[in-house]
Structures are given as C-alpha cells and as structure tokens.
Length: 254
Image (cartoon, rainbow, N blue to C red; front, side):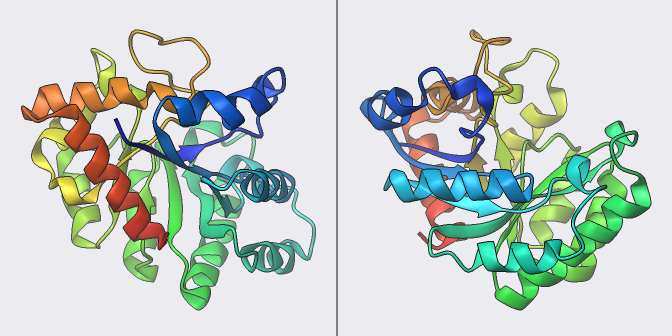
C-alpha cells in the first residue's frame, strides 16, 4: 500500500527514543512514500524543517497553532515568513481555531493570529493546514473570507459543513478517528464525499486507529484508516491510499 501521511508531528518528544530508526528504516519499509511534518510554533516549525532536510520523503509545514498563539514575539510574522521561504516548506500549518482550550489562548487572539496567517498564505500562494476544534462556524467564516487552498485536518464536522468546505475547493483530512465506533460524522462524510478531495493522515503521535487506539501513532498505521474507508465505500483500500497520496502531492505541489 502506497502511504502519504499528510499530517504528522515527528518532532514530538515521544519519538525521541527511536525517531531515526522509524524515519530512516521502519516507515519506508512499510510503504510510506511521503510525510508532511507540521509546525505548531516557531520552534517546532524549525524542527520540522530540520527533519525535512534530513529525509527526502519528508516535507515541512510551518505555522502557529491556535493553542500557541498567545505569547508570540513581536516579530513572529516576520520569522514565520522567513521559515516559509525554505524550499522544503510546502504549506502554512498547522493553523486555525480551537475553542476547547480557551485557557491556553483567548478567542480574539486566536482569530487575530489565524487571520494574519491566512493573509500571509494568500500573499505567498501557499496552501494551509487547518485545525478546527469546536469552532466550525468561525473557521468556515474565515475560510470563506480568505479562500485559501488547503485542507481541514482531522475533519470532524457534519456533512453540511463538509459540503461548504468542498465548495470552497478545500480538501478534507482523515485519520484514526474514522475507525472509532462513535465517529458517525467522519464516517458519513468519507462515504459521501468525492475521493479526489480526501487526504489520509495520522496526527502522529496522536489519534492512533483501531486496533491501536491509545498507543503512539505513526504513518505505517494509515493502512487501517484506508481499510476502514474502503470498507465504508466498498472500494479497495490500496486504491483509497493511492488516490489520497496523489491528492496530497497535487495540493502541496510535490
């Protein structure tokens, strides 16, 4: 199975014990042909770029996650612009809105940083990777205003929201959640949507699919996501994975 993981965090501390072996040997042997490593802060964006420089099948995204938007240096946008100029950076992400963790960053500050990054993405003609948690209405409003290319990562909204996002030309990313028994929204959306807008992802080290739920996730486990989507759609999982890989290459111009 050809696997392109459109969203991972291999700079995370949980990969310290075996990161080199995993990225250098284990994942390529498991059929992983690509990974888009996501930044969430200026520091982690730099770490993502370092991984992309080291492994030729790893690419980087740089951006400020909504939970990390509160205490940024005054020149954060200039620093981010510099990171986005790196040739291994193919997207501005992970950015968005997260109203579940408002103690980490107030709503108005999240919106300010999100809007600034959407404007920068439009200026630089870069796709965006969107995080949306308990903020569907506001997220869609900003996407309708700025109309970037990009993906709604770990999509958890309704079919109605999915249709609105697809109408904007956006892609939808799905990972381990679609294998969970109670993920009715995600399962409905992957069944109804056109396959040419679907991306596969892990959000590693988080959100491992059934039967590995609760363990550390990695890109090799995407095969379980493809198998579940194939089951729901009545299609070959290898075909699902191959189309999703091509969609990822197309969106991020790889």
